[in-house]
Image (cartoon, rainbow, N blue to C red; front, side, top):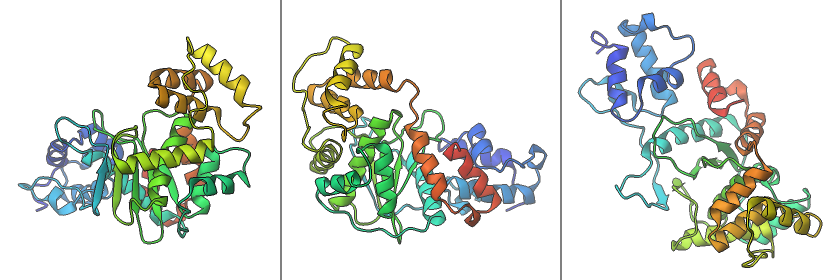
Length: 329
């Protein structure tokens, strides 16, 4: 097997499943890898081990010349919000994020405490420790309940992505968020939505992948959205009604003037998103969030919290380096 093993051959096989050379070189191989090793079979065999480990690949399929590269077999997976016209689920994105979730589960010491089914009970619990329900307080609550949370968007270019993923391990569920919208309020809603799936027992084992998080006709998605709305807004769902706003500036000023003092326990970003969803003004809502948070860093808030929870001594040097890269810390 090792006599004809070259890195060029591995790159060729990997490109056929969407893992191009530059991505594999940057994310699959350790930083100490020297391209002078590319044609040395024993070294390439070692390199293949790193690639398979980091990118969640079946090593045997990677090394067998005539066999297509396969990802490690995932647990039972439930895909939600499947709207793709070409009937393709985000398998590549799931495989890469699932490996990230697995590493998180190996690096934390938590035990899951089942969630109350009532969103308002969780809201009251959060508000007993925090002034409002937002991304930071939701993260604190998740970790206190033994729910690990991370943000992952370290995908190859043009990969079909997902918004949220829950993966069960023996002691805890791991939530991975991956929305392209990195405003804190949007990620807070996505996180609250995934908490809804857990609290309402939509997933008891395996993996759930939310390809998108929108309002549609799927009953479980409706339930998770309603749960998230109650968790974030309490009794203020659709509190702006059908009021019209000519632009983002008027919208942001109105919300700040009417809600910061009257509803200090509600994040105004949640009010803005809620209005956009009820009135089909999502573009206006997201544009307004960008006005309020011009340099969104919700993804960094999530991963900085995660980095502080990880026991980094549990990882070998190469895995440590990979985690630092994908966490962006």
